[in-house]
Length: 185
Image 1 (cartoon, helix red, strand yellow):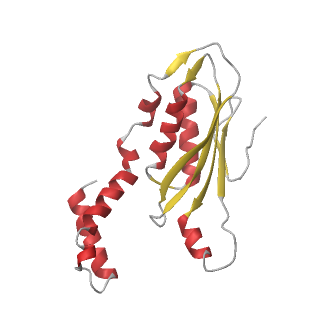
Image 2: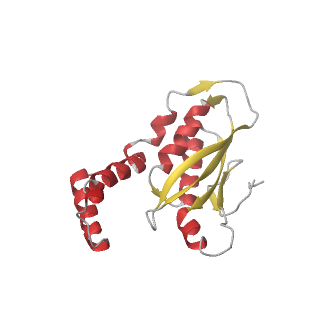
């Protein structure tokens, strides 16, 4: 991402939005926004498969391993506004286990991109399944800020979007929008 180009775009946006775009409080805003967006989209610069490589360990263990409540923060590709929540990753090891911190790191790599929650969840599941040769389930539950903002004017509660991806028992990848775990026989 080119910082200078992005700063110029933010400056043009400020001129379009604000009647006083050159006031003191906005002078360094283009630079700050460029840095923030670089941070929030740094997942494009990382190869998700490399996150797991080196953290696979041979172990004769076949029980399900679950890492719950992994915080994630991402940007919705439709509005460039945050969505955030928790992800849960579960897998059935096949003679190899992966370091749990690597699963949390994988969630972060995919969250730090312009995303939709369903794709992010699918990418985490697919990368884990392929890199670890495992059967993987990923569930994410998040709240998009645009829903919080638009519903804040009403007395309604903000619904949490949920999605799960199932690659269990050798079946093809499937994506289902749901707020609960789904297992395929």
